[in-house]
Image 1 (cartoon, one colour):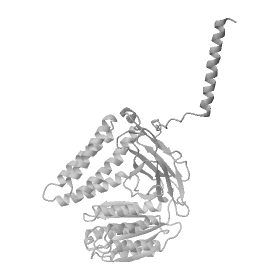
Image 2 (cartoon, one colour; image 1 turned 90 degrees about the vertical axis):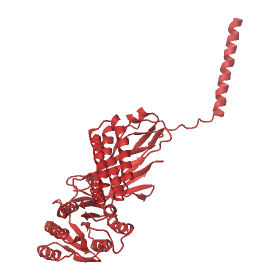
Image 3 (cartoon, one colour; image 1 turned 90 degrees about the horizontal axis):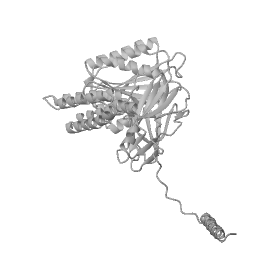
Image 4 (cartoon, one colour; image 1 turned 180 degrees about the horizontal axis):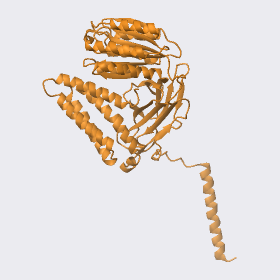
Length: 483
C-alpha cells in the first residue's frame, strides 16, 4: 500500500475511535438538562367553548380575547350563555304548579296611591293564578302578619282573598326582617316536590325596625337560594334603599325592580309569576375553578361565594325559552410570556339530591404575549364590543350611581373618565358603532351627574339619578334575566 494512503487510513481510524468513545462516555454520563423554558405562546386562537348537549339546558362560553399583553392589567372576559329549550321539561300544558308568596310593605309611607295600586296589583295577580297554584300574602309594618296562608286556588278562595286584600291599611314603621322571616318560613313549612316556590318582596322605605342591618337582611334572603327558589325585590317610589334591595334580590337569586310609578306593580307581578310557572331549571349554580395564577374578579355583579378551589355564582332559575348571558371578568398572569389555563367552568341545576351538571368539553386558555401586535391579533372584536356594551359600560354606570348616592361627585366623574379613556383607545383600533354609542351615553351620564350636583334640590336629583341609573345598569348587565 502507498505510504501516504496508509497514513490517511490510520488517522481516520483514530478519529472514528475517538468519536465512538466520546459518544459512549456521553451515554454513561449525560449532560445536565437545560432549565425548562416558559411555555411558548401560541396565541390560543380558540375563543368559543361549550358543554356537550344534554337535556333541555345548554351551556357555552365566548372569550373576548385569546391573549393578554405582558406587563399590562391581564384582564380578560368570557361571556357565559345559559339557555333553556322553548318547551323544556315543563308539563304537558307548559305550566308548573307554583307557590307564590307576596311580602308587602304596609308601613305608613305606603298610604295613599301606593297602597291603592298595590292592592289592585295583588288582585290582578290572584286572577291569573291557576287551580294548580297556591298563594300566600304576608304584610309587614311594625310587625308581620300572614294575611293569607299558603292555600290552593279555587273560585271561593279568590273572592275571599280579594276581600282580605281590600282591608289592608298602611301605618307604622318598616320591619322588613319580620316580613322576610314570616314569608320564607311560610314557604319552608309547605314545600312539596314538583312545585315551584317564588317570593316577591315589596318595600317603599328604609328598614327602621327589627333587624335593619344589611347583613342580617341579606342572610335572610339567602334562605331562598339555599332552598333552590327565587326571591325577587321591588322598590317603590323614591325613598327605599336601592343598594339593599338589589343585594336582597342577588342573595335570593331573584330579580330587582325599581318602580317609580306604583301602577307598574301589576306588570311586575305578571312577569314574575309567568317566569315561575314556566321554570325549566331551578337553582342554577356556575362553578369556576380558575387555573394557576388566574383570579375571578367579577361576574356581572352577582355575589361570588368561595367553593372548593374556586368560586360559585347563583343566577337563579331558567324559564322555558330563556337565554341568560353573564360576563365573567378574570385576571390572567402577565409577568411571563406563555400559555395559561383560564380555568374549568361548570353549570349545575336541579334539586340538591338530583343535580344535573354540564362542563365545558375543553379548558379555555389564554396566552400572555410580548408585543402589542400579538395582543391585538388575539382580540375577538365582536365579542370585545359586546363586553363593553353589556358589561363594562353598565358596571361603570352602577359604580357611578353608587358614588352619586353617596354624594361623591369627584369619584363619579373619575370613574366616567377612566371608562371613556380606556374604551376610546380600544375603539380606535377596533371601530364599533355600538361602542361609540356607549361612549356618547357616557357623555350624557356625565352631564346628568353634573346636573345632579347643582341647584337647590341636589339631594332629590342625586337620589333620582342613583335609582334610575342603578336599576338600568343591573338589567342591562344581565341580558335575559327577566321575562
